[in-house]
Image 1 (cartoon, rainbow, N blue to C red):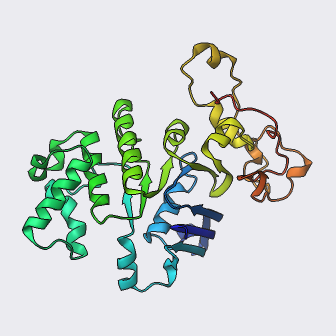
Image 2 (image 1 turned 135 degrees about the vertical axis):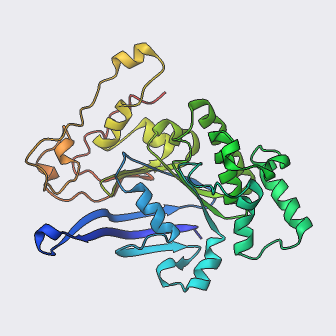
Image 3 (image 1 turned 90 degrees about the horizontal axis):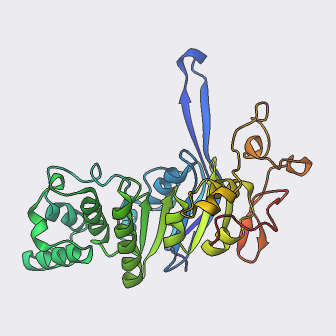
Length: 329
């Protein structure tokens, strides 16, 4: 059984506008999103800012409610669970937030921060067993037991993210949802945290939803990658397959923006423009205003279809079917 299954999820935010005499304005954020997180796999969710990645993560965690569709965690549809049942389910699923400082309470020391999930679920009430589990948790993320009495402001950004990871592991979850956990860190610290996440995933046999806008980071950590644009999944494939043979023009455009260390290769790469053309705002394909390959075949809403074994793409024309990625190595 897959830890998480997302089926045809839609999310629309509605607000009233005063100047429009109380008329409701609807903003679609997620549109027909279907994904599956496999056991002991890392699924990357990649896309530009504002495409709906964090909103989808919040829906999975139960922090937001989907307008329609199903989110099934450990075989249970979360929208139908009672509060006590959902509290039990939370033990299976934990989150690592983007900003390691704002996600930690400055009034609590490290021991209290990591021990808070244990208090909520009534675990390890004995002082000796509590101390032992807390020491094991901080050691597992590369910190020392003496750090348990310190406060978040006494640590660097990378150390604070390690504390957040230890807190997420306190309940021994099956699934970790990491919402851009390294984007606020220096590059050298990013590598340390990514190696730590990879090590934890292998030791604990975790499944992970890894949200990022950085393709290089996603390639290092993820088994499969889903590319999102304006609340839709544009492409989904195993990581190496996606990088070696992208099928959607949006994926290829994102690859062209990723810097390459070799200056000779960088000069040879062809830049892909993402400038939107006016007058195409209501086109059935959401990417059509920015696509250089739009044609007659694109005048229907694209559906996610299999174009290669295990490789799915939402593009009617498939202009990159036989093109190798310039990001491939």
